[in-house]
Amino acid sequence: MNTKKFNFIFFGTPDVASETLEILKQAGFLPSLIITSPDARRGRGMNLEISPVANFAKNNNIDCLKPEKFDHEFTLKLSTFNFQLFLVVAYGKIIPEDILNIPKLSSINIHYSLLPKYRGASPVESAILNDDTITGVTIQQMAYKMDSGPIIAQEKVEILPNEKASELRKRLIKIGGELLVKNLPQIIAGKIKAIPQNETEATNCKKIKKEDGLIDLNDDAIKNYNKFRAYALWPRIFFFKNNKRIIITDATLEEDKFIIKKVLPEGKKKIKYEEFLKIPT
Image (cartoon, rainbow, N blue to C red; front, side):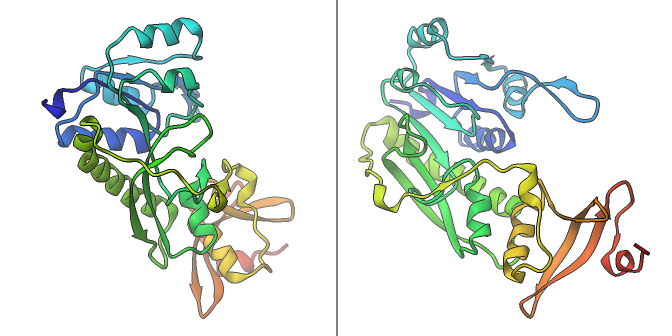
């Protein structure tokens, strides 16, 4: 059996998914069909834009579907195809169990933590917020309960002392893609023995909201620095002064002290924090 000619569907939406597709492509694996979220309005101009995964599909001449919902008609349509595997990476929607059960082999997912730790939407940020020094990547068989499926493969990764979530995620995407490529031949051959997760060790993480970036400058220094690292890309950390939001754009941890270097006051340009402190209140 030529493993690189097998039929599979890829479900995904953001950059993390399109970057994984690039890794698969470099290894000679391309999906027969891509499913992504519908086009959405983004940016200041609120222009209608396709997802990064839809863009990958377009550039590689792969059929792409953008269902608003998984209704009976769509489920029936998928079941008529002869797909052996569904691969899901950051799709953004809960996929119904009757769809997960369609492929002959399995539906599998890449998750950026050492499951059962940090099930949910923000595993990379949560590891940093909790001051972990080790995280990892898990390839799991999908179950309807979020991130609870049997584990196919895992790889541990060290979190660097000053590493931001975006930097860590970039490394994890590469490691996860390579781990998937390494295990795909065995998955396709049906030779993988997945190990059930230990439910007693399961922890969950929530979807990040903009207000999660609010910090108390008098709070624990390590806690604030970890929030800066976790939320440096979005939503960024901030405090309020005279009812104005002040975004912290650069900071360090020195001798267990949270040192703010640069800030972005609401409605103004970025400035050094020491200059900000001189501004009359």
